[in-house]
Image (cartoon, rainbow, N blue to C red; front, side, top):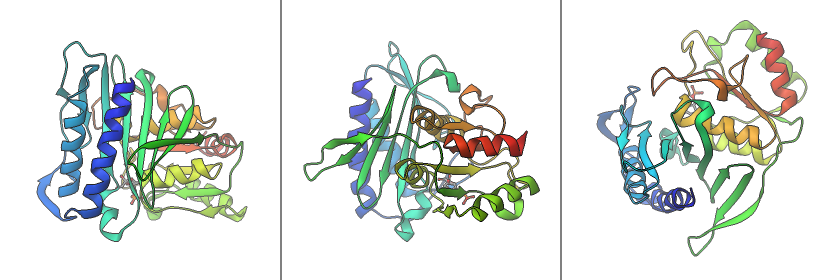
Length: 278
Ligand code: P6P
């Protein structure tokens, strides 16, 4: 497992430099979700595959940017699902973006997740590793990730990240959002899943939601590459992660790019979501 974490750290350093100095233009390719790929999406994916190819314990990888799995080492133990550069369309307006990794064993259901890692490329480059606990690291001037602290969520927070197109929200979802804001919660939503969820974790808690809407009834965020890793992080930090009714980590995708409505947060806020969607 440590070799995988070191490969992620090497990838993060290379991707950081690509974000800072490379062309942010669009390629003439689309990914399996139909998104037009940025040159940086493709470059980040190549970097990660190069670094993972050096790790014998990785049996195969599956990227949000590719339709199918890529076999690596036949005797390997782990499958790694990842989003190489989530929120990449925010780079050309200089907002923070991230990479998300789920380290799976025995398949790509939520229950198969053994560890989750994400990287935030922001004013500082930070990396969070969740196994039995959630640990924050920060890149120093020598390009080393230094341990900063463990992350835990309070029972109740102050931030609300209301995702998805509001005109598509179900009335019950809109009523819940209005009630949360009426209690004084602060709106914190950049359109980047990684910085938005990272902020709630570091500020002690709150709620991030990307619900079912009239335009995306199954939600937008992908189970294997985005949702399961963050569900793992939030649960290990003392919060909860649900699809409106049940645990996200109890789900199993029928297809690698399946999406799901998702809610991540402190226990108090998730209790409100369960009541709303009961
Ligand atoms: P919306 C970025 O494109 C992304 O996949 C996530 O990083 C982010 O949480 C979500 O989409 C934002 O979607 O529909 O609110 O703009």
